[in-house]
Length: 199
Image (cartoon, rainbow, N blue to C red):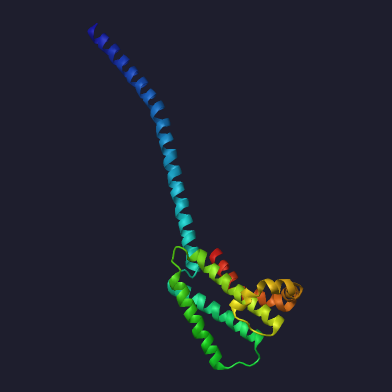
């Protein structure tokens, strides 16, 4: 009788253990799955963050954000706009004048790139390019209208009078083929900056 009781107890204990194990499995598996899902989401988020950083780094590589590359880009842009303006308003050209323009453009690029910090280069550099383009465009239109190259201070002082008295002539100069083509040429460095930034 004692042996039968022991067997019955063993069977009961085994059944009880099986029930406990099944209950534990039903509770632990959902918990593990719920823990695994946030981990997977975190890993996917980390992968996406790495991809975004690599894409931003690639975009910065295309932009001339380094001090040397920025100075070279600004110097070449200034020299290019000087050449476009010079060829548009003058008929006689000497080698010394181009050398002077190259040295002036190099100084402008070095000074501006030295002032702009690396954190603000993506904002201030296109602003500087836009300002240079605007100056050359205004100088070109003024020369086309009056056949004289005025300095910026004179142009600014006479801007209101010029807009009032020569508004129709200025609009005609802007929207003719000669005006549109030169404006596009003078805006080319700014367009190139944004094109390099989107690559």
